Amino acid sequence: MSYAPFLAAAFLLWPITSMAGTQGNPLLLGLAAVPVLFIARPGIRPKAYVLAALAFIAWAVITEFWSPGSRGIISGSIFGGDLAIRSAGLRLALVLAFAVLLVGGLLKIQEGRAQVSSRIMLGSVSIHGVMVWLSPFLAASVIPFFYDHDPAQYPSGFQNLDRGANAFALVLPILAAYLGTRAGLAWKVLALVAVLASVASFALLGVSAAMFGAILMLVAFLVVRVFPKYGLRGLFTFAAAYLLSAPLLIGGLLGLVKAAGINLPGSFQSRAWSWEVVIGKIGEAPLQGHGIEASKTWQETYAEYPDWMAQLPDFWAYYPVVPGHPHNMALQIWAETGLIGAALASLAILLLGWTLPLGDRLRVDVRYATAGMLAAALCLFSFSYSVWNEAFWATLALAVGALFLLSRRVRDSLA
Image 1 (cartoon, rainbow, N blue to C red):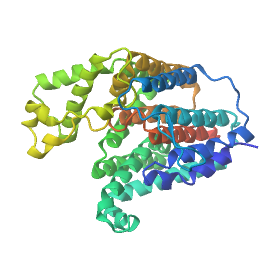
Image 2: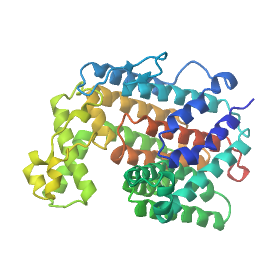
Image 3: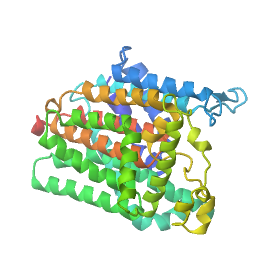
């Protein structure tokens, strides 16, 4: 029995869980992964990139012991009905375990055994896209209905829409690559319309990371078109190098911006100031880091930085410069797990990129989709979530599952 229908069944829920804020995607990933144990029987020899990722997470869990933000590993009990996994590293380890199971099952799917399943996935992704495209126009009317007409809950509703848009940015490359590589000019025009509609919707919703992710997706498409053989490996190598050099690279860019007297837009400027503080924290514990989720305890407010406060309204004086996390996973990895964590995470990315077949051995739509998804994920990685946000990683794992389904679909026109 093929595993493809089980993942396709999970994707029937993808538009709902994603537009509801993606918090349900870790559970959806688990539901999709568990059948692998009974259907696909994946091998037990993990790839080198999986071992590197496991080493990174193991190191992150170890940093719990000196992290001021640690809440312990587990609290409550099963029998008491209040069991909770407090450790962010352990939650991420569970997501990685489910993701490895998922990929193990997908690798067992034979080419041509995912024709119907891939159609279901593409249909679900398309429905998700339509929901995102309509959100700027319908959100004000729909959110009161779903949030019981309680104005206090409306901000959560709009935030969930933003997360749903970010999730769509991860699967947009699949839809664009599938449509854009179909024979006929009409399909290519439709792919372009889908991308432009997505960029416009992201802009209207104010989801800058998703908008820039869609634009970077097009840049990645161009890279693998110009360099079909080594372009994909080059993109993964760039991502690994970016993570490993993040404090120097971002610190240097911030220095150039300041020297040039450039005033960034509001949200970008606040992030830039946050990153300055975090880079300073990295210098305090460069090797081992401050410990997982330590950034939650950095409560310095803008009142402590008079030069920055002079550019802001008075009420900003009480806001923390680092709002819970830096909104840049590379800097957060450095600050909380140090050079050791950054090196392990970079190694995992590099090994993943060099484990994949050379680009010219991948079908053209799969090559484009892989490059585009990497670009979109890197953008969200740099501007949106905490590195310990298991919902983001579960969403990305499911998006990778969708990419695998596409790769197992036979497309004679691209053979």
